[in-house]
Every structure is written in structure tokens, then in C-alpha cells.
Length: 461
Ligand SMILES: *Cc1c(COP(=O)(O)O)cnc(C)c1O
Image (cartoon, rainbow, N blue to C red; front, side, top):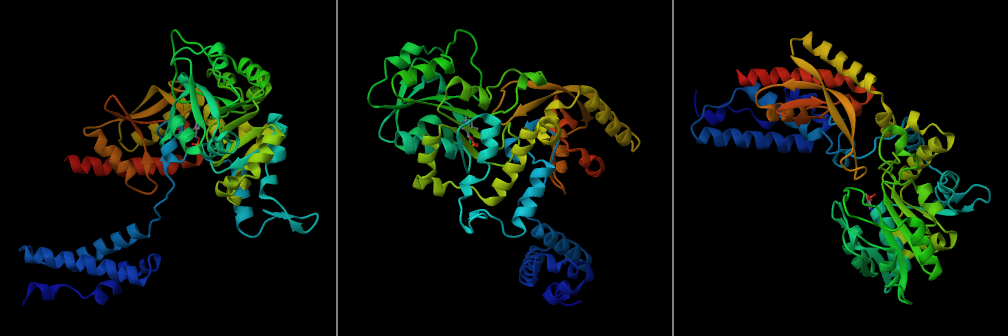
């Protein structure tokens, strides 16, 4: 027999085993050699601890798994079975087919991103999407930047640095991911003037703080929480009248920025971009990937003279959007202009899915799983809009419920696979909500559930 160390294969031998050899190209030779050495080092360490040398077949399988694992890109598609439609941690809004096709066609080659085809001269990337935003919202002009946090920051910095911005104490909010209005304000160089109280702010509270130092009144939509009880805030119309009477600006940070009336879908009213402009806001800022259902972007619409100042500010260059974003955004917006947003844009399709359709889909899943002896029930539950929009508000749904011991372990198994499946746990049951599972994902979802379930049972035995 000789030394147990001598029974270990060489790196070259391991790499030449067919199951390993056929996956080497996925990571490249150097990485494969490094991972093979690492595995053999671990085997030697185990032998030194007194363990028997591993079989060749074990080493081959382990190395193959590690190579496949290493080849996986960090950013991967995930099946969202949580029922949270705009899931911030799962990439917010999925794009429409038209938006995805636009990204593919624009990024596969060259485009007129900054080229004026009529004159053959340099053009501006800022011209794209502007006409669509004007047509849809009625705004004079528009500017698209990297995200809404950037949009708010740019507007505050360019229009209010060194001057005062009046904001109600009830609107000094934290949006999540570290976006806090007082901090953004401080970083922008604008001076925060808090007015009113947390629950009640009157028009006269703003009036009392208006002076020649005031650059703007800022209203921030309370995106991700609700205040109830003894509360009041002036309307946007009243704020606009007050601001304009004192020769100052009104900016409305809407956040989710829906272009459609949420009440048509059985949800409470969420202010639309059009309503804010009609009420007299000089600038309105909102995200591209919340209720708009497009790519990550920050959109500023409003008065042409103000937008022109923002566009020419050096900070706009630091916040500029990429062609992929502009391609996806234009395609998304054009569905709104055509009036087909609820048919084409995934988040609106999810919001608008009838309850019966959800139940039918959950029942189909149930049939397919029970045919494989996996006990599953269809239960009534609730989906959420998410994304810091319509807090606490849910849509009724039907979900598939799996009951198992150690349900968190089952959930972890679902996340650990390709594609990962993210489910919801409620009352110690694992829930899969059909509302946020894309129609073409049914088969792969059920396959993942089956393999995870079988592995889970095997482990419990
Ligand atoms: C979400 C949100 C933001 C931040 O927008 P991002 O696009 O995530 O940068 C800012 N303000 C409000 C009111 C929001 O809801």
C-alpha cells in the first residue's frame, strides 16, 4: 500500500478525468488547476488528521461540483414565489418583452446614443425618452438619471445648495438602503428647514418659514409607511400656490411614481406623476423600476427652465444613464403611450391578475405535485405590492402551501439550486404565490420543488 498520501491522484490526473475535463472550459484552465490543488490540499489535511484517503470517484465528483459552482455568475435569475411584486432585493421590476428586446437590439451593436442622425453631428443622450415622458405626463421637459436618489440629490444640489429647503417633519423619511431625506439634504449642500410636527403640518407652518433664503418647498411622498389618526398635511395645490406666491419652487419626490391610477386595481390611491404636475409641482421625481415597471432610473419631469439647469449641471454627468437603461425605459414608456401598459408590463400584469386565474394556477401546481406524492394545499393568502409603494396594502391571492418539518431548511434548499426559488414562510408552512411567478416558469418551479422536497425527506429520514 505505501503512504496514504501516495494514493492521492496528481492534479493532472484529476483534471483528465472525463467528468472534470468536460467542465474545465467553463472556468478556464488556471482556475481549474487552483481548485484541484485546493481539493488535494484538503485531502492531505484530512489524511494527516488520521482519516483514510478519499476515493478517486469522490475527488472527481467534488472537483466537478466546485468547477460548476465557480462557473456560475454571481448575479443570477431567481424565481420570485414570495408574492411581493416589486421586490427590492430581487431586482424590483421585471422588464417587459419589448423592453428586453430593446436592450438586446441597442446593446448588440452601435446606436445613436449621442449622435444626431439628421445632421451627422454630435447629439445628446438626454434627448432620448424626453418626448415620451412629455406625451405621457404632460410635463414641459424631462431628465433621466441613474436612480431616484440621484434625481433628488441632483435637484437639491443644483437648485438649493447653500439655501433653504422647507420640508414637513412628517416627511423626513428613510426610504431604505440608506436613503434618508435629512442626510441627502445635508450631502447636497441644501439647508434643511423642518416645519410643522410629525403628525400635523399646516400651510401656515410653511408660510412662517418662507424667506429670501428659501430655495424650494420639498414634498416627499411617504412611500413605505402610513400615518393614521390625528394627522394633516396641506395639499399639493396649496403648497404650489404658496410657493409660487413667494416666488419659490415646489418639488415633489414621489418615489414610486405611478403613471396609472392604482384605484382601478382595487388598491388605494397612490399619487400619479400627472396629478402632481397638474397640482402645480415645478419638478416631480420618481423611480423607473417601482410602479413604472421599467429599468432602474431616476426620472425628473417639470418646468423646462429648471430641467435645463439640471441637465447642464456637472453632477448630471456623474449620474448619467447608460444606453441599456434608455433602451428599456423608452420601450416601457411607449407601452404607456399606446395604452397597453397593463397588458405588457409585468408588474401591472401581476397586479391585475384575477383571483380566479391565481387559484387555477395554484390548483394546477397542486395536481402536479400530488401526482408525485407531494402533499400540497391551495390556501388563500395575500400578495404585496412592495418596493416602498402602498405600504401595508395587499392583494388577495391563492398560494400553494407545503407543510414539512424544518420548513426553513426546505426553504434554504429551494434557494440553493438553479434557478434559486425564493418562497414565503407563513405559519410554519412554505408558501408559493403564483402571482409573482412568471408564466413560463411553472415547469422549472415544479421541478425544483420536487427535487428539493425529495432531498428534504431523505435528510429527515
Ligand atoms: C424609492 C424612493 C426613493 C429612492 O429611489 P431609488 O430609485 O431607489 O433611488 C426616493 N424617494 C422616495 C419617496 C422613494 O419612495
